[in-house]
Length: 422
Image (cartoon, rainbow, N blue to C red):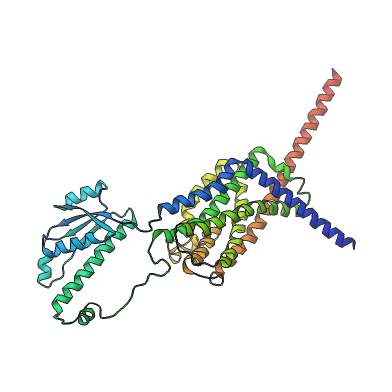
């Protein structure tokens, strides 16, 4: 009976201590403008700005310079069909390549299409001809529009030449001549081929991790600057107190980011009409370990944050590499093994891959089992790593407090002896 009372007493004390830390951390978060910016304002406005910038999904009317050295009926037909495409615009017709290159250097156009002088002659002699396409490769979206449009128009022109030379009498024969093997091209997971639907899901998950790390690191830097860790010493009177501290802080961050996560994963895609194929139950199942992993990771990383500004430099440095290491903008199979090992240290790696499959491919929790289990492993590992870090910080703070106390006692004794002598 006494053991049961002792057990429930400890449980009650643990809940009381965790709630005390939660209330204290929530009060600190609300009062700190910098933490509020990263916890509230950045997750709200940054996705809006990013999604709005890519809301058009694809680039349209990319300016192109045409150098027509053939001046034939076939070259003019190619130019008309090329300009009729919604992706490109024939902005200039140049007399030579030097004039077209000058327009590219001035960034007036993004590409050049060169039709050679013997273009029509070679086709009329039933010889293979060519059209040269030169693109500004600094932006892949414009390159894609210029090159694929030229390829499509060239394919269409080839079909018309085949039909004119075949001597067919029916449309069915023309179809067999140009397309002996019938096929339908269907773009799965991203029907519009849009850049926003491709990249936004990964960015949303990365925002959750980065803002959490920024806010927690900023709070830890402020506490270290103000020496606030001494407030946690009374609660950590035994080892179990560490769990109460970590759980109390986690409750504060988790409550805030449950709302932010719902906003990022539910509201933003609906607002900008991005692809959303997930089921809410699967999304909740994924986001629960992902948020915990990000929180514990941020609390663990905060141990190296001595000043408020340090965490911003750290996060800015790793943001772009983390996007590449997630396997979204670069194939996961082509990432070297040691870089993949480094990527496993970050919750965003598994969170991005899992969310993209849920959101864009309609996967279930069973389909993302590897990423789901990896996130739970990170939750456990970073939880105990955070406890170890906090234990070291509290012990170090306690020792410093005792040293200051001994120093103050020594000064008081010395002052008392000096007064007696007087």
